[in-house]
Amino acid sequence: IPFNRIQAVQIKEELLRQPLGYASLVIESAGYGESEGNSTTLFPLIRKQQMYRFINEVIPNYHTEIIENTQVPAIAIRRYLLRMVWISLPIILLVWGTVPYGVYRWFILLPALLLGYQQYRDAKLARGEDTLVLTYRLLSKTTAIVKKYRMQACGIEHNPFQKRLNLGHFSIQVASGNQGRTFTVRDIEIDKAMNYRMWLSNDFVDAGGNL
Image (cartoon, rainbow, N blue to C red; front, side, top):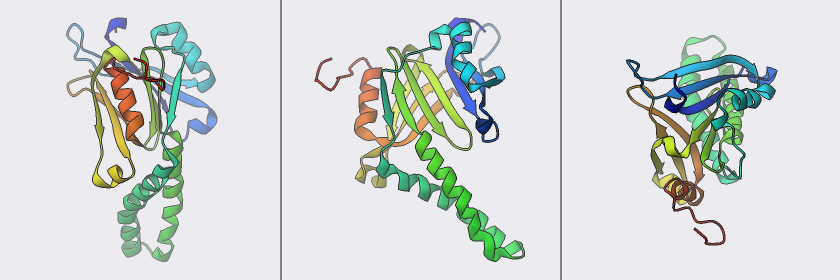
C-alpha cells in the first residue's frame, strides 16, 4: 500500500485484549492500481506501550503531539447508560420468556450499564497540528487517527433530546473501499464539535478570538 494512499489509522483494543495491554493496528486506504482500497491489519497484536513507537517507525506521519483534548461532558453519561438499557431490554424480555429462572434476567443490566459507563469514559476528540484523533467504544475501543487533509466529510447531528442538552454526534468520513469509512464520537458538546468542524475547514477560532 503506497504511503500516500493511507487515509486513516485505527488502534483497536478488544474487550479481552485490552486488560492484557494488547491492541491491533489497522489502516484505511484509498484505491490504487486495481485495488479499491479497504481496511488492512498492519499489525494484528502488539503491546499498547509499543504501539506509538511502532507508528513512529513505520508510518511517522501519523505520530502526532496532542495540543487539544476534549472529553464528552458529564451531562452525557445518562444518555450512554440509557442507550445500553434500551439495547438490553429485548434480551431481557427474550430471557424472561424462554429461560428457566428468568427472574434473574435483570442481572443482564449490570454488565450493560458498566459497558455504557466505559463508553462514556472512552469517548473524546483530540487534535494535533494537522491531525484529528477520535476515540470511542462500542464493544471494542477504537482510536482513529486521521490527517486533516484526508477527510472527505465532516458532520454534526443532533435530535431534539440532544439539542436540549447542547449535545450532538460528531462524525468524519475518509475514503476506504466503496462506501468510505466513518468515525463517530457520540454526545459531545455541540459548541466543541463546531470548533473542531471550523478547524477542519481552516476557520478555527481559538479561545482568544484569533484566527
